[in-house]
Length: 446
Ligand SMILES: Cc1cc2nc3c(=O)[nH]c(=O)nc-3n(C[C@H](O)[C@H](O)[C@H](O)COP(=O)(O)OP(=O)(O)OC[C@H]3O[C@@H](n4cnc5c(N)ncnc54)[C@H](O)[C@@H]3O)c2cc1C
Image (cartoon, rainbow, N blue to C red):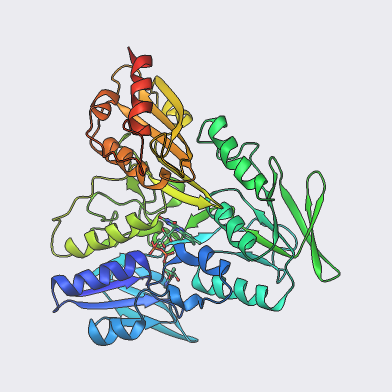
């Protein structure tokens, strides 16, 4: 069996390694267009924050280890361009020459790419995106060779806000231009205000409802024009979202799903049973709605890569799906969410009840206590939990996992309230903030 994988990062290399572990006789060929393989993209903002750290510290396993210890035929600098499904071949380019590889089973694990608005000045050397290890190297090289007193982040999603912290740590005064009129629109306004206060309290300036339309070089700096005014800066980081690298699948006639991601079933097969897709290029099923969604995040990429390897010789793994759990840190604030926001739940036709509580991260008399904010969303008719958000300087990030598990288990607010959660003064009040929020929510459900 020859298993060919297009894309050598989280999903692709998880599948390659597991396929070899499952059955060492499987011939595994990985085609990766760059010279980098298996690295933690999620660590790039934190690596940029530290001028002393080498970007290559983020490499999880080096190419030689995959080749020599695991027997994987890893071909770097190989860009796949077409899939000939009739002849079961992948056609592409490597170093100016063409290649053509036969497959018995194929995995498309081509990930996603940074979205770059088509505006004048987008190609200036001081305008960067943060997606690949090479992007990380380029940003660090720019910071090393230029004086960056001011930085402008375009986009206030999780990556944009992580980059606020990163460049703040590098001593830059950071401004953020966000097209939407609200910060973090999936959470209650009072909660988003907590994040905003953290940003502004540490000197970051937010421009909401601001569309960048032109970037021009001036005297070694840049002038960024918005619809309203202009901002002078030394570095522009564009973090306006990502798009799935699904064109190769589209050209091969495979079905696409939401946001033009590649449609896969729960066994990760595309509309061609010999071709799988996994990771950021593919869709998934939402556990709450049962519908197809596109949520490009790391755990799902690794998990779906493993599942593909397990399903090579027949479908033994069916992934139940995701609830869209995510977390990020901005300066000293942890920001976490899972499940459906109120507008998302309403769009799905749910009649919702929500509760928002401010509580404490530790027992009331315990030193180091911090505010923690919990928001829960449930269906009015059944009391089933649909989602939530947690924000705070400590205890927010990992608490969200309890709520994510409750969503996977299809718990009601009452089921969740009855859960036996841990307590000791350094970690929470006796009634964990999640339980307090559930209790308040129950009052609205009665
Ligand atoms: C800066 C940053 C921070 C992030 N932080 C988090 C986080 O905190 N938590 C979280 O859950 N997720 C985070 N993510 C997202 C996470 O990194 C991705 O979900 C994950 O990397 C997806 O893995 P993947 O293998 O599907 O795709 P990718 O990592 O995008 O890998 C796809 C690979 O395919 C290659 N490729 C593409 N097209 C071709 C082709 N035609 N031929 C050959 N090779 C090709 C690419 O070069 C690439 O190496 C972050 C991402 C970034 C960029």
